[in-house]
Length: 168
Image (cartoon, rainbow, N blue to C red; front, side, top):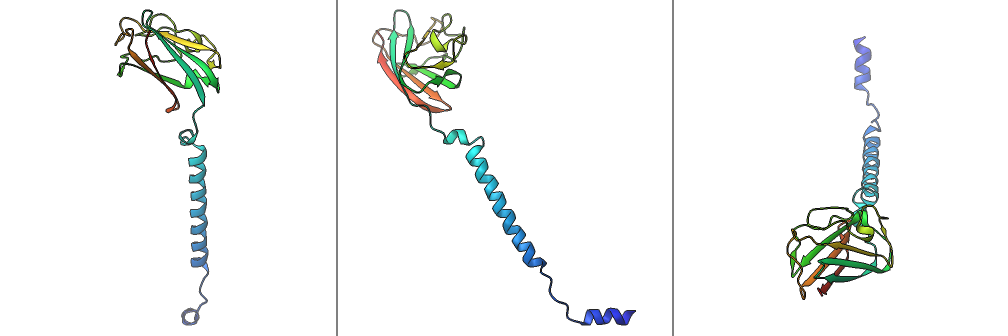
């Protein structure tokens, strides 16, 4: 029995193809993983960051006597206010309480807002519609006649519009 084993050991054996197959399998696996990552970046959670914000035009008016900030959707795409963030500054100072649209009754604001900013209204803000909020006396800074008021509208962290006007 030992002589048979010696002959097998003594005889040159053909090399196996497993190193070549292993290399090809590793290359194929790398390509598949790269494809999965590329698809994940293009269609996964990061895809929102690659999207463009809606295009729209607005008109801002501010009534200092009523402490009312009004925005009219003048042109462009419909905006879903559930995805909208509103940031207001008065004389370059942000309001202590920002309007968390849509809402009904929140700290820093009197009553419920008008138009699509009201949580009971249709959340789709279309051309021709006006949305407004009334700043409460508990919010600061208060708006005085002649103050420069700025409103920034953003969807998914991307600015849709930045508007400025003088309070009347």
